[in-house]
Length: 338
Image 1 (cartoon, rainbow, N blue to C red):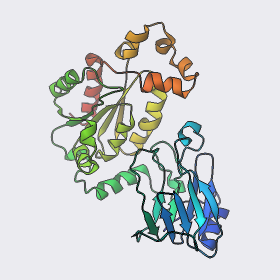
Image 2: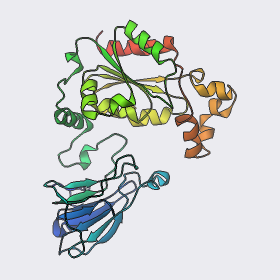
Image 3: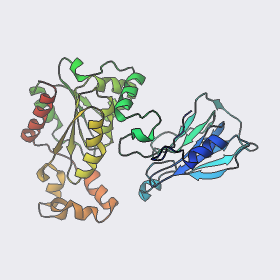
Image 4: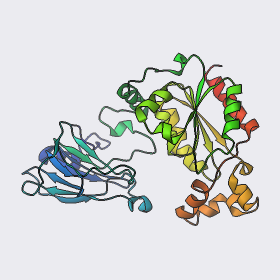
């Protein structure tokens, strides 16, 4: 089991790593993250969210909120704390025993709760923040990058296509959203894509729910198109040399580029942005051209994240200008050599 702590600039082991090697347990905290690591056996009660450390060397009573955005107060409010206790006398009996270490982290409440008691040979509680959809090779034993992570996913899901050059006919996957940031002229978009020579696959949330199957579908595609959303993260399953086309809704320029633009290039993909014009947003008809929502999105963000999210993330849909968007897809075709 490797630890989750990096070395300083001169290569000396940090105090956290020394403590880990000496006692088998240590915690590290920085601006974004708090991570606790134990190399000793641990019993995790999922119902009570308590990790019992089985070690006579350490007396511990520590609480971690295992989410790597510690500075984001709103996000952290949704994160349940995990208590780490000395469990030599008080831990419950194991219901499930595993031979690999546990990784405990929060997903913001989007996964089902398992109330069992699980035993592991060690555990990492919390995740270290590297950046948005990123790995920092200098902070990881082995120096792994996002490109390496894509290779890991390909092997894990037994994906056959390594490079987009192995795909004979250009295939495009369109992420279809049923509610917010949905494409209001999706059928017309598909028609135009097919006219350009793409075989088009429309991915609805239902289709994306089975990750094993969906990863295989994505791996067979040379282009993925989606409005800015968590669904764009699925680009990690595209083959090398594929093209990610992100449609940027009004007001979401920075988030779109920061969350997916840079990471796409790090993963060996081409990246194109289609920034909508105000008239392509449903907000234009709702507010009119002179309202700050349209003319000055920054003023809405200055009112706080809740106001901005309600307006730009949850409150707009998209009517794509097919003539403008066609130009973007033609650039994608050129990246593919067509």
